[in-house]
Length: 292
Image 1 (cartoon, rainbow, N blue to C red):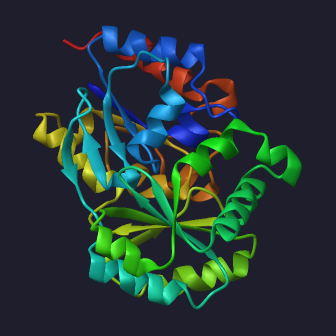
Image 2 (cartoon, helix red, strand yellow; image 1 turned 180 degrees about the horizontal axis):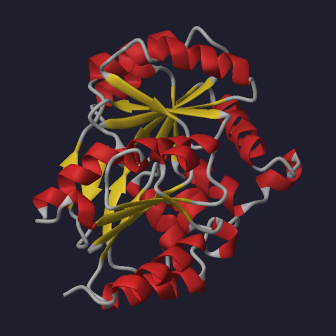
């Protein structure tokens, strides 16, 4: 019997507007009323996740930063795995050889190296990379750009980050040069202390090897007294691979999932724009009923 539902956010729980639809929220609440525990497993940090869940009135557990931090339903941190300063510098020294923007993601703000003008340019290019139909002038007026700018701190170098002693949970890279990204990925994957994944084909996400969604989800649910066969996990992108490739009770790929995810998942649901999470939840409830 499934007693825990763990869902990715972007491309899974959220629609194209990066919001949770009322249909999906209603299904989640039906699951909670039936005695099922709901968890979010996302590459976003906690403030970034909460931005999109604002007004949802959702009580759940949070696995954020691709597994770097776990918070309970009271939003208290119960586990965190930052990249050590030594390892962070090693990763940066590898990546800085390439013409690519690097974002250092912490438990709060993001940090980028450069001048104010260079960082603003990198924010615009990042939004263009993920929202191809928007021109530069339109981007500057969007709430997304304004929010990213507010949440981004400009630093002169990695030394400034090290001196502040901030916990770096993830390094985020993006580029339209997919060949270069693949080259960076292959070079980074030689380091067994880190995990390299992606949410989209044009980005890379680097965490400590102990900060991956699947293993962290397993450890957390077992600490709460659940077993792997009591978990349903849903996702769509490569940073969900560690979760959907594990032997949880039900692993569900979205219809819009990348091929690698659809191959390893046990089931497939509708796409995120067709409320696939809501559909999967209601099918589950129809088949198993309330948790005893």
